[in-house]
Length: 393
Image (cartoon, rainbow, N blue to C red; front, side, top):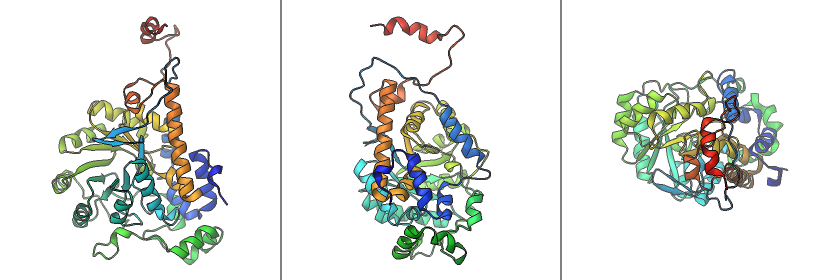
């Protein structure tokens, strides 16, 4: 039995989830593309960012709220769209929706969610954003756009970094597929994880809920490579609400999307699940911020494992941060209590890091220069020398 008191970090949640989940499910959530060298590089790049603590600044009152494309939110991180969340535990989609509602943060609802888009939007009290994949000739995609309009969504997240589904060897070894099936070859795996297996058997295996009862069949392996700029223009014209484009790493693409009418860009390498040799997304964020300027809304996901990582993303240029895997691990480890435990832990870690950096709000964090840079041979950088007199008390 796992208690939420056993979880003191996102890493604890991952460790406990690995014990509880069938190997196939854990590897689907945790796995990355190719040799997973890209995932290792991404983690190293995040770890290598050093932040500079400051002293004698009154940080007794700290505020984690911020604004997100004109909408106030109470926390500096939200929920990234993830497919088949109910594999982590039955009802995971609605657990995430509850957290979004309680914390007034956006909840990305995947095209391949295991709970339909209307139910999640209602459960989140309007905080849900619908994530869209282009598929086939795009006709089914446009049907989903019309459905999202009717449901009442005001923000669409268009994911563009999956022209073809990346090869993820850990998934392939287990024969993981969508729709999810429990077959005889997986019997030992599920038998060794009886609690998960019995709950899933009792409540039903997760399905692609947005396609139940429709004439549009989603095929995960179907090519999405036909999407181009003319398709983007067509989609932009069809969607009257806010349009976020997810999965951008190249500054040139970011600049072109600004011109083409994107309302925000979400810098992401798809959790390192697509191209093993892609650059670390946290470094791409820095370059894209420099390219699009200080005012265009930039969001970030990929490789967030702690509150300090969230702070680093803001320091590197993000206007908002989205979380993925860590939340599914939290649910797998401890259900809804585990999710709340990890969520609150991350918020506390953000607040503590802000105190160390001498900032009291997310808006201040966005503007402050919190990066540590190696000193010159004389021991003090030129900028630091010029500030010494000013900061004396």
